[in-house]
Image (spheres, rainbow, N blue to C red):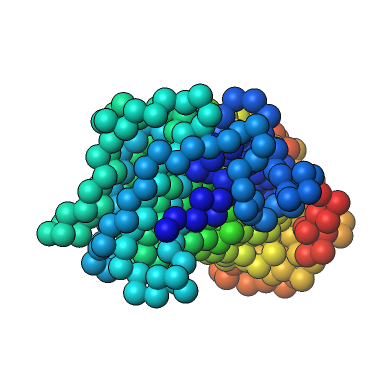
Length: 392
């Protein structure tokens, strides 16, 4: 009725450590204390992406209770839990009508088995499946198999972790406290994710208009995010995305670094104390930091405006890029490989201001402005191949 070893091993309370992140985030993550391992039928370590058919030895899990709820299509799951929760779609071959929700509660060996305070029910009028408990063992796990298209409203308290995988919905809302929130291949018209002290990890491609807010030292790590509007903020944690395809994005951090791979669209980046690094920018870009440094490669130009109040700026450009330049800093260094025509140099107060046209660009077409009143601006040429950073 319910596939006990399916998914990612969440229900057996052994959250495999994930290799996450774009480029530099090769760290591992586990949602419980102690080392986590992947197991195969031969006892060796499993390859990423493979799924165990049975529970790992030494971490035996017990199914405490299972429910099968008949539901109407296009409903909603509302969960309020202090424990781990995994949501994934029904097997379309086994359940072609997609007319039910399967719920299973599992506990680790030696864990509490009391489910007296757990509510699992379906409200036909609201088309809502509710899974609610304040008293369930935080080390327990709840597994939910839902129809492919199902809205989500999930709140986990304490160390409870949430993973949502391969679900499509109009609205997806996930809030965690200290637990990690993982979204893998999720499609949603509106996606809201918030954590007060955990991590946010987006695996595969996540589609939708997205708001992600991470407090304290929480980090946000994204493989690929695609949507019309995207807003992401951290406080003291790293904000990292490998691919970002949006019409309009606003990314900010108080003290954490912002590290991006390939970004497309109109992007605004702000950090007070962190550094900003972009492997490749295609579109309009505004990036500012108060104390940090900026390092950006501009591959295809819209309008680029960079400012570091106390740090330095490194701008790398494609050799054929056409742009009007305006570079202002305590020092400005333009590499000889960059072809700048009509270049002028003005000294004002403690700043050097250089203007010019790169590769015969029009003065009123596309431009790159960089301002580092207390730092150095470096402009140099870089090929697209170099931007791939294959050594990483």
